[in-house]
Length: 467
Ligand SMILES: [Zn+2]
Image 1: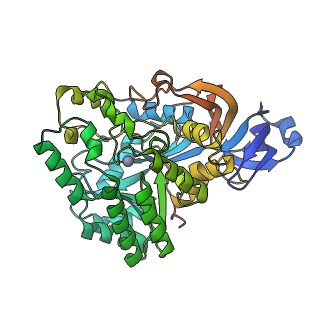
Image 2: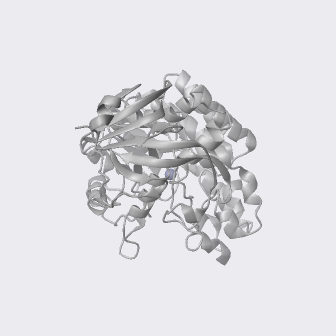
Image 3: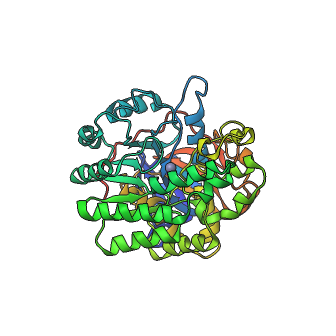
């Protein structure tokens, strides 16, 4: 009755590593023990994992994966394949403007949820879920929030910037309403007044090239907005999740908020852990636009502070913030003199999350492999309500990654199979490689190649975040 036994690998959990076998039955973990020879004798399949790490599949809690549209029918599926090849077995997507949502979906959370579920059904190679964006363009999102939570979407996101931002009062109300329902608001923390005035000044001076995207967003723009989110969390008593934290300055605000009792969790992203602001010195505007993300890349001191925060527990998780922009399309506008504030923000990363955290974090001794599992799987599962995922424990979904820590390779966009045409990490040498991936016990990647099926990925209706 056992479907699969993974034998002889090193099973890694958030609290320890041990040489053990893992048995899978009906899509769930059946047993994790030192020697499962007895189950292996009758199992449908036995996989030798000698020399490999056996990890819970990564849960990428922050992507802007774009849904299928008529002229790009494969982009959602393609990015789910890229995620699988990178060791991710579940991802969360946002339905913010630009990801393929209709005008009706941009006016109503429930309409957006219905549409998003319909268009993604049967399209993903791995499991997935959605965090809805509470937009300032909506008719009455507060009224809809309880029903959204009840529909298995216990996390939503609000932006303090962009033309679909929520003003402060509505952001506070959304946080409070969600908190009362056992749910959690995610906040993009950059201050709109400081940012808008800096952009106006730059444009007035004729500073339109992509490098001014970064100079108009110093870390205090992020930090003061983070401090405001902490104050909102403190007064409302509601949980708050800070997305893509990029700077030491903002991290100080989170630490202070947490010390003051705010129920805060915080994520950062590989680009802030691996790349720094020197990338904006590229004289080629399109080269520079490849790194146009918000917040922007920071200093080496910020990067080091983030690694320290991951190691000491003040940062809770690492996520990709994947945006499938393309050099040939969205970023190409930089070559035509389009001002930086009109060029799409974001960079692809759905396929390189585990790779980069392992290679730059574990292989370089900045964090242990158990901490990596906590940051990429166990804590994201807990905070985002994936009750059956995030750990190799009996009864949980058999989302399993076999990872070869001794492999060496070079990141190249052509190998990633994503819908974007570039990677910010092109040519970078990394340690470790994903060999096999199973989603609920089904093989999706074998020997580093995709062997899965479009549509086997299930939409996950999530429970309350544990904060
Ligand atoms: Zn994002």
